[in-house]
Every structure is written in C-alpha cells, then in structure tokens.
Length: 247
Image (cartoon, rainbow, N blue to C red; front, side):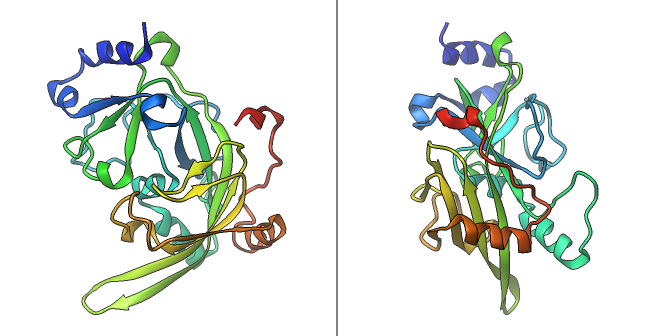
C-alpha cells in the first residue's frame, strides 16, 4: 500500500476535526523528500511523534506528531522562541545544561507522507508552513534525522516604534552541509556552503512566503567560522560526515 493510502487509513481513526482540517502531502507534492526541524539539541538520534509541551492552548492536542516545516524561515516562525533564546544568553552570559548554546542545528527528516494542518488545528499554520510527521504505519513509528547544518544570530537590532512592539532585524549565519539545496523561504534557496541572511526576525514576518525584506549572501568558510567563534562558540562545529554525501 502506498504511504499516502496508509496515512489516509490511519486518519480514519482520528477525531473528525482533525480529518476535516489536514491535507496529506508527499515528497512528490512538496518537491522534496525531507522536511526541516531546528533544535538547540545537536545529538538527537530519533524523533518520536508526541504531544508537545510548547504548543499554544488553542492548538490540537489529540495527534502525536513531530512538527516540521518545508523552509528554515518556517521552522523559526513555528519555533517562536529564537529572540528569547538569543536575548537571554546575551543578557546573562549563562546557559543551562542542554539548553541554547548560541544557535540551533538544522535537521532534515526524510518522509514518505505527512500531514499539513489548517489554522483550525494550528493557529499559525499558514505563517509557518507547519507539517506533521505521524506514526501511521509500523515502518513510520519514529523518524531518524540527518543533521545538515547550523544557524545562529550574529547581531540583532531593535528599532523603536511609538506605541508598538519594536521592529527587530538580524544577521543570521547559516551553514548548509547538504548537496541538496534547502529553502530558507519560498523564494530563497540555500546551497551547500555558508550564508549570511539579513532581514526581520521571525516574529516580525507575516509568513514563510514573505521574503522580499530578506537578502541572502554566500560567504567564505573562514568568515563564517570567525563569526561563529565570536557569537556561538558553544555550538560545536563538526566536519560533514561521509554518510551525507547523498544529500
């Protein structure tokens, strides 16, 4: 049975609200055989679908899932804590064991079929492009990630607005360790190498499709490592493993 048919069968046991507000997607429909996830934890060996603790109270809490997105910007919008992570470490200079170390790692999760929820299940689904990986068959009980890159903020600038939340702009450095390009946003593609992306912070972006305010520039490895040492020295640097050659 095709994965999408297995997922369709699995959905038959889900609550009606879920069935009516998800779309089944495949690598063919998305144009990619993996989805993205960011984390402060660089040693995750497997992802098991579960009900998360950071979900908004309005979000569905009936479907165990791994939350992923098709773009890096979407991951940050869904994560919604990057400025908190950055500013807390910047203000205290301290970290707790296992917490934010100055940046995030980028995981690719290969998949055969996934769910795309509507805003009735996830309030910011359209903004983040969130997708769900679920345990719809014995072969898909868990998902093994591939660490394909790292990302950190070198600087963040706040611009005051009278009576409103300040605008926030950042210089984001990205390391991509995959032969297959990844999407930063709908129109910005990142190939293997090192990049600086300048633009508004995720909480000031309407959606993963809104990228006209961003600029992406490829930089040298030495420039990347110099900035990484200064801004995210605790985010370990690893040479690209041989098993990633297919990516």
